[in-house]
Image 1 (tube, rainbow over the protein chains, first blue to last red):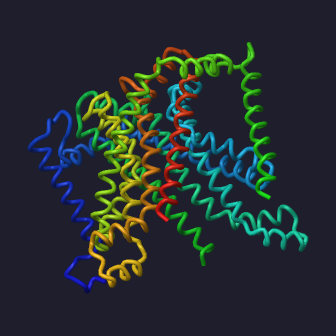
Image 2 (cartoon, helix red, strand yellow; image 1 turned 60 degrees about the horizontal axis):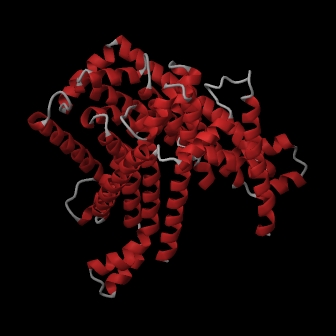
Image 3 (cartoon, chains in turn green, blue; image 1 turned 30 degrees about the vertical axis):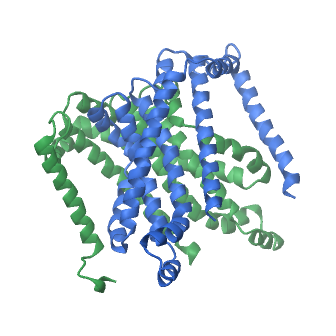
Length: 254
Length: 253
């Protein structure tokens, strides 16, 4: 492919594009922007050590990560259980799944005040809101995964006298793995969204407090630095789930 | 077969909905759940009905819809244009597709504090966050649709002497259209959700603002009525957009 022209490899070109964009931003911000609102990327980088050493901010980041992980684990476990319970039974699938889809389609941001009313302004509300965002994609993918089960496999196992438990461990569970990891990936994206939304809405010690503080005190370097730290954490969490998905779904296609 | 199994299914679903309503009504009888957290169904539906029949919600609704339309138009024009430009060369696709997909995995809501700083508390910051969030699925789907058109079609058209415009209009467009439409549908819906989210976090007007200020004033019944309204709106949007997508897909074939 590369022999067609004197083109560099796409990876290097991508890097150059990123550098060019950053340079454009740097120059633009230095020449034209109001320093109260926008800062060049170099200043944001210079603010990074300050962000990463301030114990209060570190603690806020730790709280946010803790909220995301707790909500994620709860969403995956509950979503998995509900998904199996709903998906494995024809009756519940017909009756409850539409209700779940209905709930999934509601704009959850509008009920955020309710979560604050019930759980307070501490981490509990963020965990609950992240959980309610994350559980639906998990349920829906698990149900879809159960649906893809070949009936012939089940019939074969049953006719050879497998018990319910044996069917679950040897047929349903291995078939669940790919959709389980897909659900995990989608759930992670949703949990991140939920927790961050709740954090930004109201927060006493989490990152929402500091983003608001930096924005209201007009210090864009700190804001940019904090946001890039959070973005990095989010990308690491997302990519972790994606890698797990790719790795554990491999047997299925092979 | 299908016709027969449909009716009991609907009955079961209706039963579940009625059961939920019943539990709601039972749980909010005096002395059970605090009516501030969950008001009984009757006043909620009364408020919902008032919203539908009076004009009090129009100003806020208009703010939200206006933000949503502007954000979607911005995202779809930039997304489709950029997607088209990138998809013209396979090399550009290999350079930019992973870059855009990587950016997509950053939760865009993180940018909202920045947008508040840049564009203020008014509509600007909501339009910006809606545009950012809707842009990625649109551009990624446009690239996916246009860049992966079956090469045999393109070669066939070229060997029969199609010029660039003809190639685009009668080969690329129809082949890529369903994928691009999916991106537009996703963008349309998540722009709406993002704008509601932005309005919830901080705003001066709009549907999300209205719900939050009712919550802060502890007007639970009214807040639930407004939430029902927002949910109804999300459903109408979802249904309309899915219908348009299905129609567009059929029209192209």
